[in-house]
Length: 115
Image (cartoon, rainbow, N blue to C red; front, top):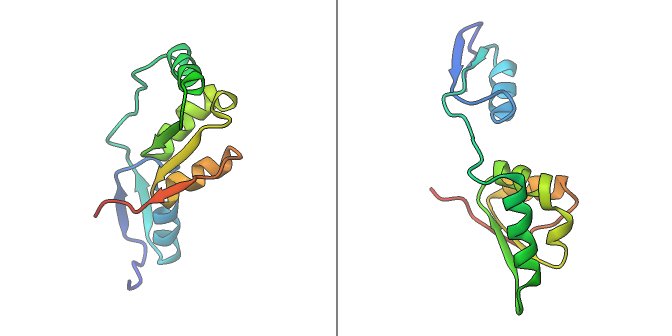
């Protein structure tokens, strides 16, 4: 990528979600403007998430929780991290796996991100 010499670049994610891209743009001389176009709203209440995690933990046999985004990790682990002790974890992509690591858990399986 060539130097961007003060050019303004619109990044359509929050600063937190696009930090790597924003940092790269800054190192290339751009002025990155983060304008999120999507808001994440949980469909389940914290109590519903906790109850679902408890039901998963109590179920017989092999138990898995699959996370498709770092946001999902943040929402579930923020409420039910302890409930998922003993549950195997799957993550889609390295960013999602890293989010699990930030909560002290390691993904048992990390799937490649979709192209």
